[in-house]
Every structure is written in structure tokens, then in C-alpha cells.
Length: 262
Ligand code: IPE
Ligand code: IPE
Ligand code: MG
Image (tube, rainbow, N blue to C red):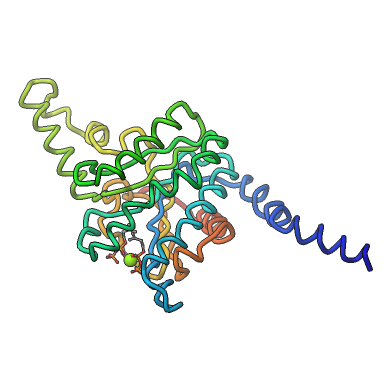
């Protein structure tokens, strides 16, 4: 009886390991996306379904941030993971909800910074720093500083990010450079334009995932997604975990990317 119980316990404890044995070596045989970008959607609906306030969904969504970051890092070859955390349009939400979202980076420092440092992950922010409250910026700054020398996966939080804003900013800066004679108008091509975007130092997303059933882009990386593979799931973000992430990667590996050729 004790033997049986012990065996069951060992089996139970190693369950995540067994799962990884199934997924990771198999996925590593195929192409791994260099950059995965995720529109984390459905926190509010997840909470509503449970009779809870929307912010409870955002808190629950942090667990998924942790699980997906771990899964992406464990795969070993993903260079960047970008998580759409707050859009330039999300200011339209009730003040209390916005305040709660703006407090999450501070909470994330308390709960996750140590592990991210241990994993050699570099945390960055993508978006307009103007308009973010000082305490949020401070937390983001702490993250960036504490992980600046890390050389592993880049974990990018798209915060106060809007792709149209990003494109307009890039255009303005290009105009300034052309006006001041630093840049020749005829040299402005796709590569040059790319250098003026917030994502300049990142590879283009190979895979874009959106959770919670909505099949739209919502002002996310309009330029960068030109040739990304898109993957949608009905699962709400708080229920999106390691297994679903691996499923998306598996699906990505079955796609035939042609970039307009045959
Ligand atoms: C995604 O969940 C999180 C953010 C946009 C910050 P939502 O809050 O959009 O959840 P739904 O779409 O209302 O369910
Ligand atoms: C997109 O989700 C923004 C983020 C996930 C941060 P939204 O919930 O804001 O998008 P819409 O309003 O449904 O298009
Ligand atoms: Mg939403």
C-alpha cells in the first residue's frame, strides 16, 4: 500500500516533467519561432464567468504571464517574447481598472524578479513612457536595470503601446533626420524605417497568438506582423498555460511560410 502510494506520489510530482518530456524534445526538432508576440485577452470575461470583478481576471492573468514566460524560456531558442499588456486605447477603461493595471509591474517585481534574473531573462518595455504614472515607470525601470546585463530571452512588455502611435513617431523622427540632413529621403526604405520603430532591435514576430476568441489585431504591431503566422484560441488568458503555448508552437511548425514566393 505504502509502495503504491509512494509510486503515485512520485508519478504525481513528476507530472510536469513527464509533460515536458513529451513536448520539449519534439518541438526542438522543428523550427522554433525567434520572436513570439501575444495579445493576452479575456481577463475580464474570465472573471465575469466566475462572478468576480474584472481586476480579479487581471490578477489571475499574471499566473499565465509567469507560466508562458517559463515555457518560452524552457524551449531554449526563443529570443524574444512580447506580451501586449496595455494598449494606447485601454485608457478608455474605468479609472479603477486602469489604476489596477498600472500597479501590476510593481507586483510583478515582488513576485517574479528573482526568477527572471535567475533565468538570465532581460526585461524590456515597448511603448510610450509618456503618460504612464511615475510608480509604474519606476517599477519598469527597476526591471530593466536589474536585468540589463542578462543575455537570455528578452521579455518585452508592450505597455501603453499602440502601433499607429509607433509608426507616426517613427515617421516624425525620420522627417527630423531628413530635414537636418542626417538622412537622405531616397534612403528611406523598409530596413531604415524598421530602425525607427520601437522594435528596431528585435526580430520580427514569427508567431502571434491571441487568446479569448477575438480575431483582430487591436493596434498591435501592424508593421511587424506583415508575415507573422497568426494563432487564435478561445481560451481566456488566465486559463492559457504551458500546454496551450506548446500547442501553438506545434501548430506554427506545421505552417508553410512562403513570403509571397511559391
Ligand atoms: C486583456 O483582457 C487584458 C488587457 C487588455 C489589459 P481584457 O481586460 O481585455 O478582457 P476582456 O477582453 O474584457 O475579457
Ligand atoms: C488588446 O485587447 C490589448 C491588450 C491585450 C493589452 P483589448 O481587449 O483592449 O482589445 P479590443 O478592445 O477587444 O479590440
Ligand atoms: Mg479584451
